[in-house]
Image (cartoon, rainbow over all chains, first blue to last red; front, side, top):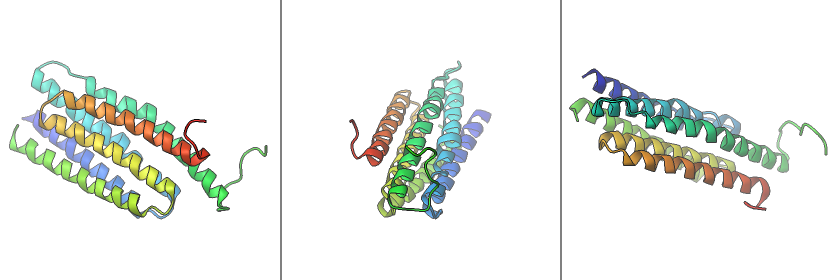
Length: 108
Length: 92
């Protein structure tokens, strides 16, 4: 019984975090502000779903089933890379358009 | 599958669906191309989370591997799109 309550709580928490992230993605005004909310879904949302999966399958098979933990690890490796690439691309394109952004660090 | 868990999974999938619809609105509207890439990346993540939740619903270990593949495909596509925006071509 407590297993199902824990799994349900984790799943609903993950859904609410993802919903908040999506609302932020729609409502914030500038692109560099909009870069932040998706991190809420990809960190807390993914951790909660992975924890729910681990708890549920461990209780189902009466042994530790930990492979769902690979998902947060993969996200922790890949997401910083895509975030930096998208931020670099946005900064570069805004600079090309003559937007109000900080200058490059080194003039070459 | 108890009624509590069924209701929780349906509510979670509804949250994911609304989140995906909002991201699709940003994908359609997005003033710049970077916004669209960011929204697509977010939609990949939400789709992966939905597949994980469905894996709990059907008590199936196979959907976990599908979620892993979606995560890797999302990484490759977002990196390629960001590279395209930065350089104008993907592989130079």
